[in-house]
Length: 209
Image (cartoon, rainbow, N blue to C red; front, side):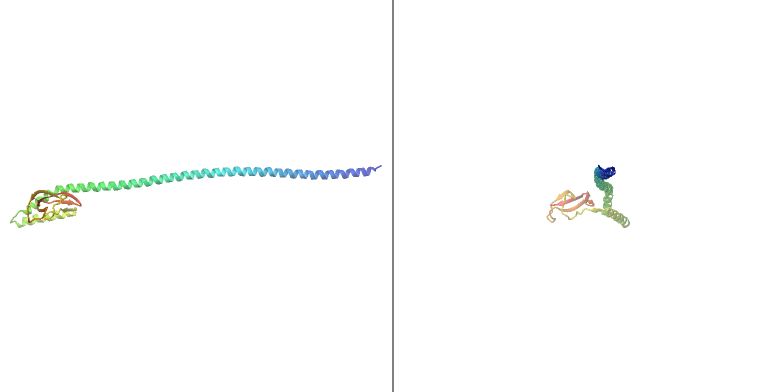
């Protein structure tokens, strides 16, 4: 017969072992639960990071698209600006050319209207007179007239003794003269004039041969 005290002792030892075993198992369960929780947290964080990365990528793409669109707008505006500058430059040159043309046309018209006065002064100088003061006065007026024409850019068309040129001369008479050269101008009935490179009045001439 086993003593009661020993039974109690054995039961206490078994209880201690069970408690210890249960404690170890409990710690394992807690550790496993903690690990599982950590895994859950890790997966959640990874998923959150992925979402965040996707949002950032989407945001970056939107910003890149906006920048690309802005670049297109800038390029378009720059092209419009360059075209506008070119059009304005062409307009300015065209306007200046038209202005110069109008000025030259007005000047040409005014000079043409004054040329008959020049012709009359020439006729006056060609007339013989004993009044030296009168002749001197007409001569001075003609000198002033020639100076004014020169300042305006008007030059006389060379004629007498020159070879006939239909681009600057108008032949109104023709003679045969063996002493003269072919198509030589032997007389000038009315002087011709040029304004710059443009003939504003052809020289009216007599041509030999």
